Image 1 (tube, protein in one colour):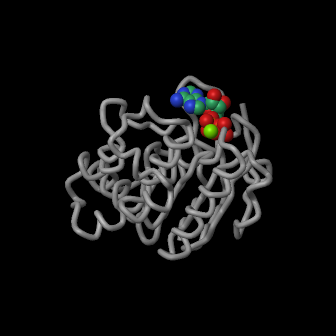
Image 2 (cartoon, rainbow, N blue to C red):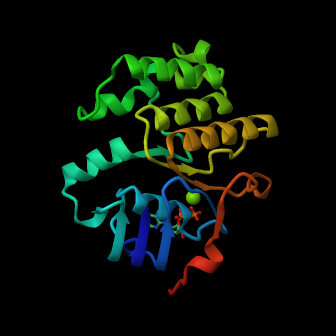
Length: 221
Ligand code: ADP
Ligand code: MG
């Protein structure tokens, strides 16, 4: 369960303010987040991931209050529990595809690669048809291939929460469907919570819940 309560957040020096009185997302739910550009969707994902800290209020995930975790506990939470698909992918240009997927293991030694990880990577790369791209560097890959690589990286450590920021942005319809099916099937098989920001009203079908930012927040300048 993810529970936000009396949450307030603003960026220093900006008049944008995010205020969410109450939001609960049950374990295993597939949630789409929609809303206008600039309404705070990416900010919300960053608050859930503990990348940003609220000015007040609580972010509770399971029995943990994310705000009160130490820096190390927060890093471990992000690496073990969260799979983040960033809108701009954040692939590392000097690492090949496989090393990009393995990045979570390189930046945090609280998780370790084992035989199971290798099987899981093979399976994901098969399903996403990027096996032949693992030795390639990001600048040698198409937009869709980068997107799929970023998704493999987000899922590599088998997170219980997937935060996907417009994962189907700028993709053709076939690739969009493919990617959403992959995320849905991962979430179902692993009882993982999936929170997907999307602009794409065609993609809303498979979700359990749609959260519309226009209903969720109140903004004050
Ligand atoms: P969305 O993802 O819904 O498009 P964001 O969460 O990215 O919206 O941004 C919400 C608002 O906060 C926007 O007005 C944006 O300009 C502002 N914002 C985002 N990141 C920062 C930042 N690092 N510093 C200051 N303002 C920011
Ligand atoms: Mg955004």
